[in-house]
Length: 382
Image 1: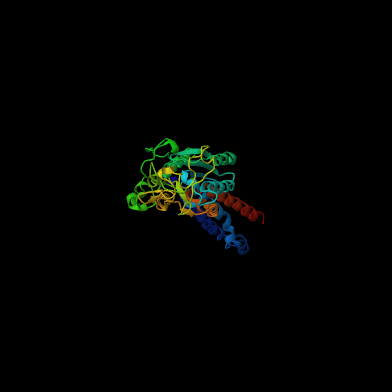
Image 2 (image 1 turned 90 degrees about the vertical axis):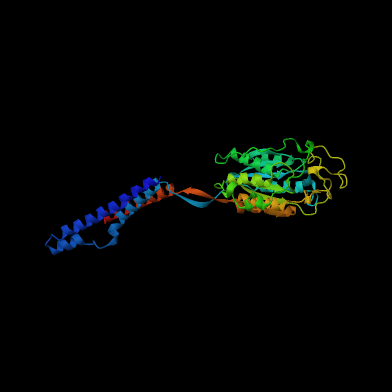
């Protein structure tokens, strides 16, 4: 309310009245012919201390006028009590054993440590994705519910990174009224193992998405939301909305995405536990006969058109991070993944927000008024 700043004009007006009163007192003092009386009346008139009470009062009035206008400043503020959405890839490639005992088990252990290390005020949600993305646990401070869901995940067919980002946006929108739900897009709705796998969706080049510049459509990014998305994947998008398109929607809503590329560039045999297979162990768990996850067969045949879907698509993930204002991380082993997750809070605990200064100005005004009263009483009794 900038118009309330007009109230600050009273401060110089009162200061002018105070100066006029001082001049008037001096003119009255010189009328005395008795020099002793004149000296007594003028004793201390040159001391600056007698002006302190009125200065404190005028300063308090100025701060009250400023507080009434509700001033704000753009500053970086802590967001440690925000919401974190963990989007976990559970595609069949997470059974690769290049990370012992396999990628999925290592990811589950690292995510468990990360979740247990969050403070009580931080809400964490879990999105899992393979052939489609779903919200497994809505953002909650209940760690037991979250960890139980994490332990119960099973692998599926396909990798839908873009859909996982959109599902994460929707989960944030349920909590934050300033974040709009994701726009509806056409994507498969069937479960991974039962769904046919179309040709892999090519990763768009940076030039096709505005040069990869930070921001939403048109290059403009919304105010940064305190909620973030941590996306952990070991492969490439194989169907549905592309990661670049989903990133544009996230950027338009101020949602930052922190992708983590997990696994080595040389994946070995695929082997998961019966629970990780969803209770049904596929035929031919050995290297030669285990194929079909995500539309590729075996480790050696996991590519189409030069794109190996058992290996992280770093180009797409870096583009997602750049578009949304997040940061891309790479982890090739279990220790590296734990370290990346442990370092995440250092990168996401601050965000730019409008901070209201009216309360601080009001408190400071009250302190100045109190100080003015104390100084005035001390002068009166001295």
